[in-house]
Length: 237
Image 1 (cartoon, rainbow, N blue to C red):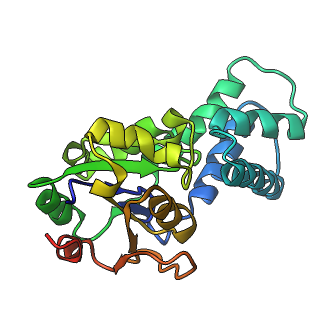
Image 2: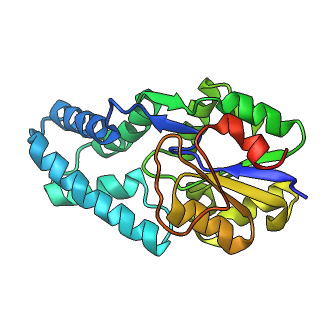
Image 3: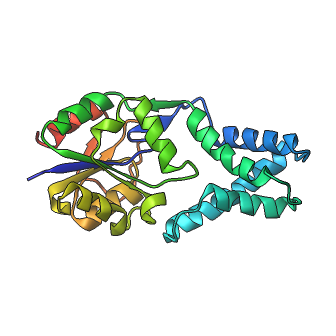
């Protein structure tokens, strides 16, 4: 019997507005903060270093070596730029990632509120999210702006659990908080390699959401939905 459903965050519950690049926003904020402190670094150089840094993040993500944070990012870029220590600049640069996370234009998945409200009438709901360079605190606030935060009962953000999907440990804290076993739960996400693989590995029912991004790679999900409003019926509810 299905007792709970967990959801991925990015490109499942919400997505960055397709006309906007979060990387461009981060580079702009970083460039402005450096310039305000008297460091004239060309945008092309900052973009190059951000690309290097993202490769480091992805390596940590794929190896499941723990969260790679804005602080790690700033310390890496600081060293690559050879900057002298300046009072407050390091903290200011770290804070630019929070600012971008708060300000970046996001859109909720169509029908998300309707879907979640229907599910919550009979099930418990959770979020299992691989956090990038925007903290879980900020992600919660952004979800609250859409009126969706209150519909969830448990959370598994990687910057809090220390684990990325598809590792079972990314899901376990949410199972414990919801009081369910994996076989009593389904997981909904867009990424076959993390969401589908993770759900399959722990014995959950896997649902691939293709409303924002349609990734058809293996492994295959038990169910594919393109509109969250169809999810309750797809789960047999």
